[in-house]
Length: 192
Image 1 (cartoon, rainbow, N blue to C red):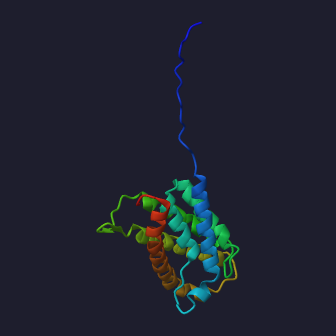
Image 2 (image 1 turned 60 degrees about the vertical axis):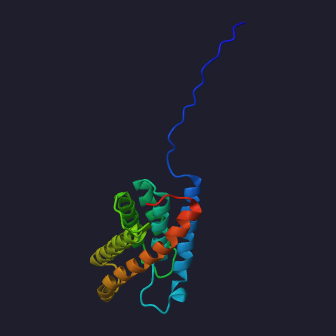
Image 3 (image 1 turned 90 degrees about the vertical axis):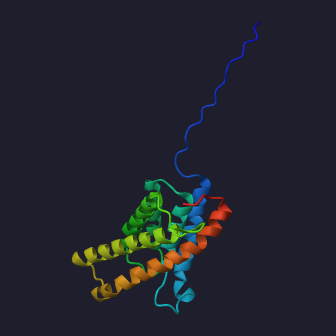
């Protein structure tokens, strides 16, 4: 009998896709966004500018987990699907606008920009603001197309959309900036 050793090698493969903890975080944040959006008239009814909590939450999720580009688009699209079930929703417009918002968020977090004051990063606020603008303008464009092709939408409301889009973007940026630091610490994530 010979005592020969056989060399064993452990081969690891790069993991593809999101981890289960990332998927759960996305689900929890989108669910929280849906609940907050459903009750936003009660929560911030005193304000003429209301945040879109669903957008804020998918931006926060994308910042925290840093998914691949296509995964960010899917997260945005799923947020749009979720919006279909919420009150005061224009059918189907959110499917496109939130996918665009997710795509823009993914691209923005890849850009190596330092927006720090000391050790405090304002990149979450800036990227959320720009992603909300892209989502809002895409939503506006889809509504214009729907009217062009005969949908029965109130055309007078379009004049106020610019103020609403920029206001929502500003409020969403503040929400994400406030929530980013404690969630980043709680989840043990790196800065963007």
